[in-house]
Length: 76
Image (tube, rainbow, N blue to C red; front, side, top):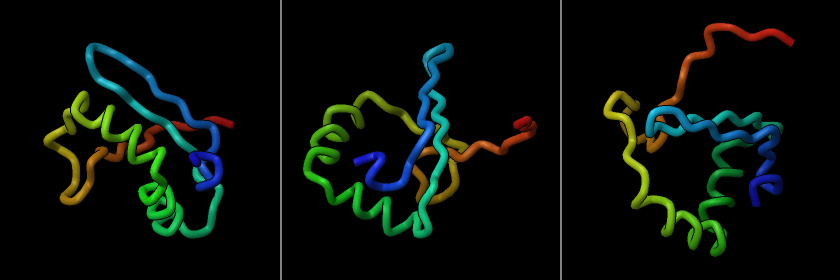
């Protein structure tokens, strides 16, 4: 479902009890693709296992589960 929803180059990092994720979105309608993912029964099953293990950062924006991070350096 992740690739069906146009996500590529997806990595999750762990440091000091925190998880950091990196994704590249290759689609044209992020909200639509994320709604498709959220409607998927297998994804819902996975989220029901994983959500109790996660604590979102208090600094995240209103309505976000994940806190977006600002990219401060990039080199191709």
